[in-house]
Length: 218
Ligand code: ADP
Ligand code: MG
Image 1: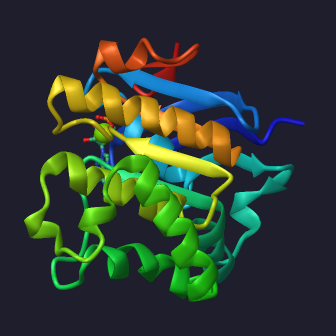
Image 2 (image 1 turned 180 degrees about the vertical axis):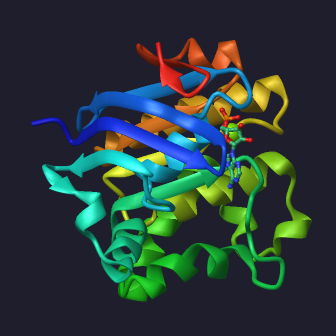
């Protein structure tokens, strides 16, 4: 069974057809890139997979279970425990140091801080940002902030790691580094990785390419 089965998913915002009937299956422990022009529906598809929003029509099955059958509370649990998110803009809270930023979603999810802290230390070492954990986000470079984001997304070992233009505001050297780190960590954590990008160099790192045009997968 595929980990995700997306069946005829449509999403409209008023008169805008963001998704026009998408069918896809995504396997567990696999890596995908979603490409397409701006406005083609990439982010919308990612948000629906992550349970941040619901389709207007169609179904998304996760391990055979229909996401639309989840009430809001179960969907929040799904987002918290099953999915890790990395966005282009960092969404680190400015008033907390990086360690506390990383621990926040995990604490909401009820993880024990001691187990988690160890995992965070290991990840920080791998990503070369141990020296950043006690700092505040504004004291970090863009590349460092994105690495902290990745730690936060991975700290609960999500089955699904969703990244929306994760290298969108990094220079090309850091883009390549962050992309290979994402791939390497997803493999190690046995997470399915889905990366949205408009950067062909980033896309070239992936064997499974999903191309979107005007709300459809082509
Ligand atoms: P992409 O990520 O490929 O650039 P999006 O998924 O963000 O594309 O958007 C697809 C289409 O849906 C665009 O026309 C966009 O303007 C529209 N759209 C996306 N989100 C919203 C929203 N919350 N409200 C209204 N329109 C939206
Ligand atoms: Mg987008």
